[in-house]
Image (cartoon, rainbow, N blue to C red):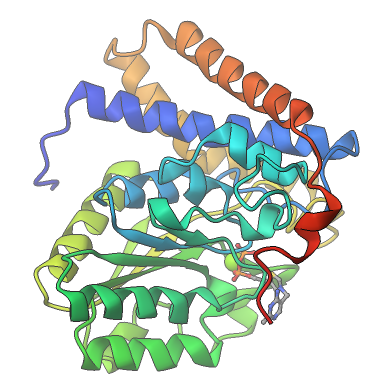
Length: 321
Ligand SMILES: Cc1ncc(C[n+]2csc(CCOP(=O)(O)OP(=O)(O)O)c2C)c(N)n1
Ligand SMILES: [Mg+2]
């Protein structure tokens, strides 16, 4: 039983913000198909409840380290969609002046420590931010998102040990979608589930249905509070799924269209909350809200189109060897 009293405004906010992520992802894929976006895109569609449930448990100033599937995390921490889209378009008004693209969107000032093309690289960055928070006594909390495919990296185990030993204010969030590129992760792990690994590192390990936004949010609130109180890290495992291929251009030979469609019907976290809100009469303005989101995304695309490419002089700025 949930200990939280959910307000209609909060649930409507979750619904709207999950839709904002999905609308951004769909527009990005479309723009990519038009050749407007450089590099591969990794769609977050299907996993929206993870980013929104977790990031809504954070306060301004907290840190988030993201993954290659990072657009949803950026939107969830409050990044501007227009600057995100400009980054995908490789334009100067993007978060990294168009030089990072989808895999490197970062807004350090807002606590978004960056998407990351290196699987498992976010752990150490987030642990470093958590150590800064602890040493400086800032009271900030650090969250690292990662996929199930990243759990078998050595960095995961190094950070689990150090974060527990030093009681760092860190929340480790595994978005377990069952796949690492084209391989079922169950075939790559000797352990049965990710959350059980927490036991060896003497921290709480919590597994929840990632499609239940309430469950995600509640688990995140507990973990974030624990971290903020100086009680150390928590490992959260969110069972989720992606509805697209690993990245744009993946023909998905490892699963059929019918399988994906059935998965979508059975799991969609947005539809799940939407059905509940509709039944409770809390979404009479659904169409108007969706139109607002579409307008925000269209404006983001127009902003990206209108932004210039970085000048040649930008080639060597913000570059560290
Ligand atoms: C260090 C490293 N090894 C391999 C890759 C290639 N690679 C990119 S994504 C990926 C799978 C990641 O799976 P998971 O962590 O479960 O995230 P998901 O794509 O499912 O969200 C791999 C192996 C990489 N980018 N970095
Ligand atoms: Mg995965």
